[in-house]
Length: 337
Ligand SMILES: Nc1ncnc2c1ncn2[C@@H]1O[C@H](COP(=O)(O)OP(=O)(O)OP(=O)(O)O)[C@@H](O)[C@H]1O
Ligand SMILES: [Mg+2]
Image 1 (cartoon, rainbow, N blue to C red):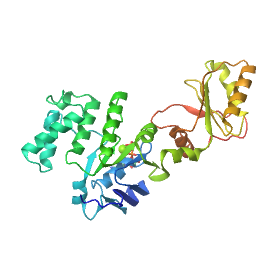
Image 2: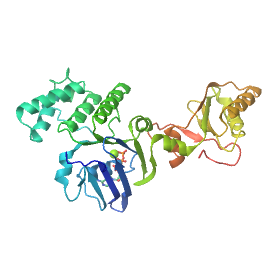
Image 3: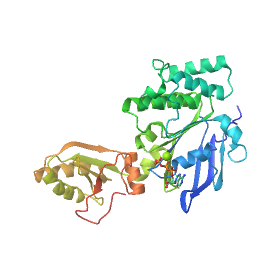
Image 4: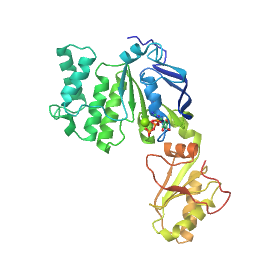
Protein backbone atom coordinates (compact mmCIF):
# COMPACT_ATOMS: atom_id res chain seq x y z
CA UNK A 1 0.00 0.00 0.00
CA UNK A 2 1.20 3.50 -0.71
CA UNK A 3 -0.44 4.70 2.48
CA UNK A 4 1.95 5.21 5.37
CA UNK A 5 1.00 4.53 8.96
CA UNK A 6 0.16 7.45 11.25
CA UNK A 7 -0.43 9.84 8.44
CA UNK A 8 -3.99 10.89 7.77
CA UNK A 9 -5.65 9.02 4.92
CA UNK A 10 -7.35 12.26 3.94
CA UNK A 11 -6.05 15.72 4.69
CA UNK A 12 -7.13 19.07 3.36
CA UNK A 13 -5.89 22.47 4.43
CA UNK A 14 -7.49 25.78 3.66
CA UNK A 15 -9.41 24.65 0.60
CA UNK A 16 -11.06 27.48 -1.29
CA UNK A 17 -13.17 27.48 -4.42
CA UNK A 18 -15.14 30.32 -5.95
CA UNK A 19 -17.81 30.22 -8.62
CA UNK A 20 -18.06 33.75 -9.94
CA UNK A 21 -18.00 35.82 -6.77
CA UNK A 22 -19.63 33.11 -4.67
CA UNK A 23 -17.41 31.13 -2.32
CA UNK A 24 -18.37 27.47 -2.55
CA UNK A 25 -15.50 26.77 -0.15
CA UNK A 26 -13.95 29.52 1.93
CA UNK A 27 -11.05 27.77 3.67
CA UNK A 28 -11.95 24.23 4.73
CA UNK A 29 -9.65 21.88 6.68
CA UNK A 30 -10.42 18.16 6.81
CA UNK A 31 -8.64 15.19 8.27
CA UNK A 32 -9.40 11.48 8.51
CA UNK A 33 -7.17 8.90 10.17
CA UNK A 34 -6.75 5.58 8.34
CA UNK A 35 -9.63 3.17 8.90
CA UNK A 36 -12.05 5.80 10.18
CA UNK A 37 -15.17 7.52 8.87
CA UNK A 38 -15.15 11.27 8.46
CA UNK A 39 -18.65 12.69 8.18
CA UNK A 40 -19.05 15.99 6.37
CA UNK A 41 -22.39 17.35 7.41
CA UNK A 42 -24.10 20.36 5.94
CA UNK A 43 -27.29 21.68 4.35
CA UNK A 44 -27.91 22.18 0.62
CA UNK A 45 -25.27 24.37 -0.97
CA UNK A 46 -22.86 24.09 1.99
CA UNK A 47 -19.99 23.02 -0.27
CA UNK A 48 -19.98 19.25 0.34
CA UNK A 49 -19.89 18.18 -3.31
CA UNK A 50 -17.30 20.83 -4.11
CA UNK A 51 -15.01 19.37 -1.41
CA UNK A 52 -15.66 15.83 -2.69
CA UNK A 53 -14.83 16.84 -6.27
CA UNK A 54 -11.57 18.46 -5.18
CA UNK A 55 -10.50 15.41 -3.15
CA UNK A 56 -11.30 13.11 -6.03
CA UNK A 57 -9.29 15.28 -8.49
CA UNK A 58 -12.34 16.19 -10.59
CA UNK A 59 -11.98 19.85 -9.71
CA UNK A 60 -8.97 22.02 -8.95
CA UNK A 61 -9.18 24.17 -5.84
CA UNK A 62 -8.44 27.89 -6.13
CA UNK A 63 -6.39 27.69 -2.97
CA UNK A 64 -5.32 25.28 -0.26
CA UNK A 65 -3.87 21.81 -0.42
CA UNK A 66 -5.16 18.27 -0.10
CA UNK A 67 -3.73 14.79 0.11
CA UNK A 68 -5.40 11.43 -0.30
CA UNK A 69 -3.47 8.41 0.96
CA UNK A 70 -0.44 10.65 1.12
CA UNK A 71 -0.71 11.89 -2.49
CA UNK A 72 -1.16 15.51 -3.41
CA UNK A 73 -4.39 16.01 -5.36
CA UNK A 74 -2.83 18.71 -7.52
CA UNK A 75 0.67 17.36 -8.05
CA UNK A 76 -0.11 13.67 -8.29
CA UNK A 77 -3.74 13.18 -9.32
CA UNK A 78 -2.93 9.83 -10.94
CA UNK A 79 -1.83 8.28 -7.64
CA UNK A 80 -4.82 9.80 -5.88
CA UNK A 81 -7.18 8.20 -8.38
CA UNK A 82 -5.47 4.82 -7.96
CA UNK A 83 -6.13 4.89 -4.24
CA UNK A 84 -9.59 6.37 -4.23
CA UNK A 85 -13.08 5.07 -4.93
CA UNK A 86 -15.82 7.62 -5.55
CA UNK A 87 -19.57 7.29 -5.42
CA UNK A 88 -21.00 10.61 -6.56
CA UNK A 89 -24.17 12.31 -5.41
CA UNK A 90 -26.11 10.93 -8.37
CA UNK A 91 -25.61 7.25 -9.09
CA UNK A 92 -23.60 6.84 -12.28
CA UNK A 93 -24.66 3.53 -13.78
CA UNK A 94 -25.18 2.66 -17.41
CA UNK A 95 -28.87 1.83 -17.54
CA UNK A 96 -28.66 -0.34 -20.64
CA UNK A 97 -26.13 -2.65 -19.05
CA UNK A 98 -26.93 -5.19 -16.37
CA UNK A 99 -25.56 -4.78 -12.87
CA UNK A 100 -22.96 -7.43 -13.58
CA UNK A 101 -21.91 -5.78 -16.84
CA UNK A 102 -21.61 -2.39 -15.15
CA UNK A 103 -19.21 -3.74 -12.55
CA UNK A 104 -17.31 -5.84 -15.08
CA UNK A 105 -16.81 -2.75 -17.22
CA UNK A 106 -15.50 -0.70 -14.30
CA UNK A 107 -13.10 -3.52 -13.40
CA UNK A 108 -11.83 -3.67 -16.98
CA UNK A 109 -11.38 0.11 -16.97
CA UNK A 110 -9.18 -0.34 -13.90
CA UNK A 111 -7.04 -2.68 -15.95
CA UNK A 112 -8.16 -6.03 -14.54
CA UNK A 113 -8.05 -9.09 -16.77
CA UNK A 114 -11.31 -10.67 -17.95
CA UNK A 115 -11.24 -13.43 -15.38
CA UNK A 116 -10.42 -11.19 -12.40
CA UNK A 117 -12.96 -8.64 -13.56
CA UNK A 118 -15.67 -11.27 -13.72
CA UNK A 119 -14.78 -12.58 -10.29
CA UNK A 120 -14.66 -9.12 -8.71
CA UNK A 121 -18.06 -8.24 -10.20
CA UNK A 122 -19.49 -11.45 -8.74
CA UNK A 123 -18.09 -10.74 -5.28
CA UNK A 124 -19.47 -7.23 -5.18
CA UNK A 125 -22.90 -8.27 -6.45
CA UNK A 126 -23.02 -10.73 -3.59
CA UNK A 127 -21.89 -8.35 -0.88
CA UNK A 128 -24.35 -5.66 -1.98
CA UNK A 129 -27.24 -8.12 -2.19
CA UNK A 130 -27.70 -7.58 -5.90
CA UNK A 131 -27.29 -11.17 -7.06
CA UNK A 132 -30.92 -11.71 -7.97
CA UNK A 133 -31.02 -8.62 -10.12
CA UNK A 134 -27.47 -9.03 -11.44
CA UNK A 135 -28.45 -10.05 -14.94
CA UNK A 136 -31.13 -7.55 -15.78
CA UNK A 137 -30.65 -4.05 -17.13
CA UNK A 138 -29.80 -1.68 -14.31
CA UNK A 139 -32.35 0.76 -15.77
CA UNK A 140 -34.99 -1.50 -14.18
CA UNK A 141 -33.42 -1.17 -10.71
CA UNK A 142 -35.01 0.78 -7.89
CA UNK A 143 -33.23 3.91 -6.64
CA UNK A 144 -31.77 2.02 -3.71
CA UNK A 145 -30.46 -0.80 -5.92
CA UNK A 146 -28.83 1.71 -8.26
CA UNK A 147 -27.25 3.43 -5.35
CA UNK A 148 -25.85 0.12 -4.09
CA UNK A 149 -24.57 -0.72 -7.57
CA UNK A 150 -22.85 2.64 -7.76
CA UNK A 151 -21.33 2.10 -4.32
CA UNK A 152 -20.11 -1.34 -5.44
CA UNK A 153 -18.55 0.34 -8.49
CA UNK A 154 -16.57 2.62 -6.20
CA UNK A 155 -15.03 -0.43 -4.50
CA UNK A 156 -14.06 -2.45 -7.54
CA UNK A 157 -10.35 -1.63 -7.33
CA UNK A 158 -10.23 -2.08 -3.53
CA UNK A 159 -9.32 1.54 -2.87
CA UNK A 160 -7.83 2.50 0.49
CA UNK A 161 -9.96 5.64 0.60
CA UNK A 162 -13.61 5.80 -0.39
CA UNK A 163 -15.52 9.03 -0.87
CA UNK A 164 -19.30 8.86 -0.81
CA UNK A 165 -21.34 11.93 -1.61
CA UNK A 166 -24.71 11.60 0.14
CA UNK A 167 -24.77 7.81 -0.12
CA UNK A 168 -28.25 7.42 1.33
CA UNK A 169 -30.18 10.46 0.13
CA UNK A 170 -33.42 9.23 -1.37
CA UNK A 171 -33.17 5.70 0.01
CA UNK A 172 -35.92 4.08 2.04
CA UNK A 173 -35.10 2.99 5.62
CA UNK A 174 -34.20 -0.53 4.47
CA UNK A 175 -31.90 0.77 1.73
CA UNK A 176 -30.33 3.16 4.19
CA UNK A 177 -29.72 0.40 6.73
CA UNK A 178 -28.15 -1.82 4.01
CA UNK A 179 -25.87 1.00 2.93
CA UNK A 180 -24.84 1.75 6.50
CA UNK A 181 -23.96 -1.90 6.98
CA UNK A 182 -21.86 -1.94 3.81
CA UNK A 183 -19.99 1.15 4.97
CA UNK A 184 -19.37 -0.36 8.40
CA UNK A 185 -18.02 -3.55 6.82
CA UNK A 186 -15.75 -1.51 4.60
CA UNK A 187 -14.30 0.37 7.54
CA UNK A 188 -13.92 -2.81 9.58
CA UNK A 189 -11.70 -4.00 6.74
CA UNK A 190 -9.44 -0.96 7.16
CA UNK A 191 -10.79 1.36 4.46
CA UNK A 192 -11.05 5.07 5.20
CA UNK A 193 -14.38 6.64 4.29
CA UNK A 194 -15.34 10.23 3.80
CA UNK A 195 -19.07 10.59 3.50
CA UNK A 196 -21.18 13.66 3.10
CA UNK A 197 -24.65 13.73 4.46
CA UNK A 198 -27.54 15.97 5.32
CA UNK A 199 -28.72 13.47 7.90
CA UNK A 200 -27.54 14.09 11.41
CA UNK A 201 -28.56 10.60 12.39
CA UNK A 202 -26.33 9.16 9.69
CA UNK A 203 -23.30 11.11 10.87
CA UNK A 204 -24.13 10.06 14.42
CA UNK A 205 -24.30 6.37 13.46
CA UNK A 206 -21.32 6.14 11.15
CA UNK A 207 -18.81 8.89 11.63
CA UNK A 208 -15.82 8.77 13.98
CA UNK A 209 -15.38 12.49 13.47
CA UNK A 210 -17.79 15.03 12.09
CA UNK A 211 -17.14 18.30 10.33
CA UNK A 212 -20.14 20.57 10.03
CA UNK A 213 -19.93 22.98 7.11
CA UNK A 214 -22.17 25.83 6.15
CA UNK A 215 -21.65 28.39 3.38
CA UNK A 216 -18.25 26.87 2.60
CA UNK A 217 -16.93 27.22 6.15
CA UNK A 218 -16.39 24.76 8.96
CA UNK A 219 -18.73 25.75 11.77
CA UNK A 220 -17.92 22.83 14.09
CA UNK A 221 -15.89 19.68 14.30
CA UNK A 222 -15.52 16.80 16.73
CA UNK A 223 -16.99 13.44 17.58
CA UNK A 224 -20.77 13.17 17.78
CA UNK A 225 -20.59 13.16 21.57
CA UNK A 226 -18.26 16.15 21.68
CA UNK A 227 -20.64 18.10 19.49
CA UNK A 228 -23.60 17.08 21.61
CA UNK A 229 -21.66 17.95 24.77
CA UNK A 230 -21.18 21.47 23.47
CA UNK A 231 -24.86 22.15 23.42
CA UNK A 232 -25.05 21.24 27.09
CA UNK A 233 -28.09 20.48 29.19
CA UNK A 234 -30.84 18.02 28.45
CA UNK A 235 -33.92 18.25 26.31
CA UNK A 236 -37.33 18.06 27.88
CA UNK A 237 -39.97 17.38 25.27
CA UNK A 238 -43.63 16.58 25.35
CA UNK A 239 -46.61 16.63 23.05
CA UNK A 240 -49.69 18.77 23.66
CA UNK A 241 -52.48 17.16 21.62
CA UNK A 242 -54.96 20.04 21.99
CA UNK A 243 -53.87 22.88 19.64
CA UNK A 244 -55.68 25.51 21.73
CA UNK A 245 -53.59 24.65 24.80
CA UNK A 246 -50.21 24.83 23.08
CA UNK A 247 -49.38 28.48 23.62
CA UNK A 248 -50.26 28.26 27.33
CA UNK A 249 -48.14 25.13 27.61
CA UNK A 250 -45.28 26.96 25.86
CA UNK A 251 -45.63 29.85 28.33
CA UNK A 252 -45.42 27.40 31.21
CA UNK A 253 -42.27 25.77 29.87
CA UNK A 254 -40.74 29.17 29.14
CA UNK A 255 -41.29 30.08 32.79
CA UNK A 256 -39.16 27.20 34.02
CA UNK A 257 -35.75 28.47 33.01
CA UNK A 258 -33.72 30.72 30.76
CA UNK A 259 -34.47 28.84 27.53
CA UNK A 260 -37.39 29.35 25.23
CA UNK A 261 -39.25 26.24 24.15
CA UNK A 262 -39.51 25.28 20.49
CA UNK A 263 -42.88 24.21 19.13
CA UNK A 264 -43.36 21.94 16.16
CA UNK A 265 -46.75 23.22 15.05
CA UNK A 266 -47.49 20.21 12.96
CA UNK A 267 -47.17 17.67 15.76
CA UNK A 268 -47.71 19.83 18.85
CA UNK A 269 -44.32 18.73 20.18
CA UNK A 270 -42.72 21.20 22.58
CA UNK A 271 -39.02 20.99 23.39
CA UNK A 272 -37.01 22.99 25.87
CA UNK A 273 -33.41 22.86 27.08
CA UNK A 274 -32.87 22.41 30.78
CA UNK A 275 -29.85 22.27 33.07
CA UNK A 276 -31.87 20.74 35.90
CA UNK A 277 -33.24 17.62 34.23
CA UNK A 278 -35.56 15.73 36.55
CA UNK A 279 -36.48 18.75 38.68
CA UNK A 280 -37.59 20.74 35.66
CA UNK A 281 -39.53 17.74 34.48
CA UNK A 282 -41.44 17.51 37.78
CA UNK A 283 -42.07 21.26 37.81
CA UNK A 284 -43.31 21.22 34.23
CA UNK A 285 -45.71 18.34 34.76
CA UNK A 286 -47.02 19.86 38.00
CA UNK A 287 -47.76 23.24 36.42
CA UNK A 288 -49.26 21.75 33.28
CA UNK A 289 -51.58 19.59 35.39
CA UNK A 290 -52.67 22.62 37.44
CA UNK A 291 -53.48 24.42 34.21
CA UNK A 292 -55.54 21.42 33.09
CA UNK A 293 -53.35 20.75 30.05
CA UNK A 294 -53.11 17.16 28.90
CA UNK A 295 -49.71 15.99 27.60
CA UNK A 296 -48.35 12.86 25.94
CA UNK A 297 -44.97 11.22 25.25
CA UNK A 298 -42.99 13.10 27.87
CA UNK A 299 -39.27 12.63 27.44
CA UNK A 300 -36.06 13.86 29.04
CA UNK A 301 -33.04 13.15 26.86
CA UNK A 302 -29.46 14.25 26.22
CA UNK A 303 -29.03 16.57 23.23
CA UNK A 304 -29.08 15.06 19.77
CA UNK A 305 -27.12 16.17 16.73
CA UNK A 306 -30.34 17.93 15.73
CA UNK A 307 -29.92 20.19 18.73
CA UNK A 308 -26.30 20.75 17.73
CA UNK A 309 -27.35 21.78 14.28
CA UNK A 310 -30.02 24.03 15.68
CA UNK A 311 -27.55 25.72 17.99
CA UNK A 312 -24.92 26.17 15.28
CA UNK A 313 -27.06 27.38 12.47
CA UNK A 314 -30.27 28.50 14.13
CA UNK A 315 -32.08 26.11 11.81
CA UNK A 316 -33.65 22.74 12.37
CA UNK A 317 -32.23 19.65 10.69
CA UNK A 318 -32.24 20.66 7.01
CA UNK A 319 -33.14 17.18 5.88
CA UNK A 320 -36.39 17.12 7.77
CA UNK A 321 -37.72 20.45 6.67
CA UNK A 322 -39.95 20.57 9.69
CA UNK A 323 -41.38 23.78 10.99
CA UNK A 324 -39.90 23.91 14.44
CA UNK A 325 -39.93 27.53 15.49
CA UNK A 326 -39.00 29.13 18.74
CA UNK A 327 -42.09 30.28 20.56
CA UNK A 328 -41.51 33.90 21.39
CA UNK A 329 -44.16 33.92 24.09
CA UNK A 330 -42.50 34.86 27.34
CA UNK A 331 -39.22 35.96 28.79
CA UNK A 332 -35.85 37.11 27.57
CA UNK A 333 -36.23 36.09 23.95
CA UNK A 334 -33.46 33.56 23.96
CA UNK A 335 -33.62 30.97 21.25
CA UNK A 336 -32.33 27.62 22.53
CA UNK A 337 -28.56 27.90 22.36
N1 LIG B 1 -20.57 24.44 -11.30
C1 LIG B 1 -21.02 25.41 -10.51
N2 LIG B 1 -21.23 26.66 -10.96
C2 LIG B 1 -21.65 27.66 -10.13
N3 LIG B 1 -21.92 27.50 -8.83
C3 LIG B 1 -21.73 26.27 -8.32
C4 LIG B 1 -21.29 25.16 -9.11
N4 LIG B 1 -21.20 24.08 -8.32
C5 LIG B 1 -21.58 24.48 -7.08
N5 LIG B 1 -21.90 25.78 -7.07
C6 LIG B 1 -22.32 26.57 -5.89
O1 LIG B 1 -21.39 26.35 -4.86
C7 LIG B 1 -22.05 26.18 -3.60
C8 LIG B 1 -21.71 24.84 -3.01
O2 LIG B 1 -22.27 23.80 -3.82
P1 LIG B 1 -22.10 22.27 -3.50
O3 LIG B 1 -22.69 21.52 -4.64
O4 LIG B 1 -20.70 21.99 -3.15
O5 LIG B 1 -23.02 22.12 -2.22
P2 LIG B 1 -23.52 20.79 -1.46
O6 LIG B 1 -23.18 20.97 -0.04
O7 LIG B 1 -22.99 19.59 -2.17
O8 LIG B 1 -25.10 20.87 -1.62
P3 LIG B 1 -26.21 19.69 -1.80
O9 LIG B 1 -26.52 19.19 -0.43
O10 LIG B 1 -27.36 20.39 -2.39
O11 LIG B 1 -25.64 18.64 -2.71
C9 LIG B 1 -23.53 26.38 -3.89
O12 LIG B 1 -23.83 27.72 -3.62
C10 LIG B 1 -23.65 26.09 -5.36
O13 LIG B 1 -24.71 26.82 -5.92
MG1 LIG C 1 -23.86 17.96 -3.07
